Length: 103
Image (cartoon, rainbow, N blue to C red; front, top):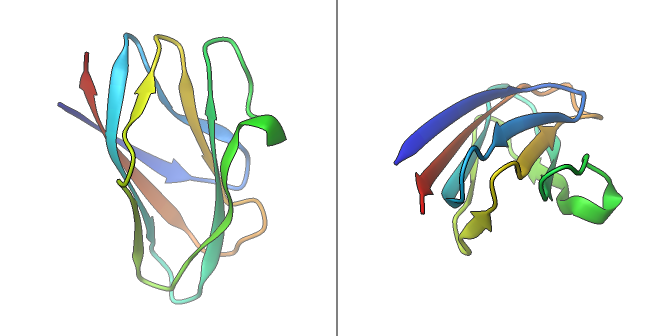
């Protein structure tokens, strides 16, 4: 099992890139500020860039000083697939922690 920590910015940036076939077990998105904020989460196959076609969470609201946990369904990523996270319209600051296990 591996843990990846990512500081979410306003630009759409890859938070995790699979280097082999990988299962994503959980993603924690933590709002580190005193105000509510929104994030977008994308999942792309190998070779693709984040776009509206790959959006899995759009303007997800994370309350002030709270953590949103994505763990209901496990994602299986092929080598080269990516998880992208951005907070384009938010003054809040976010940290994402992604837990994965190789297959």
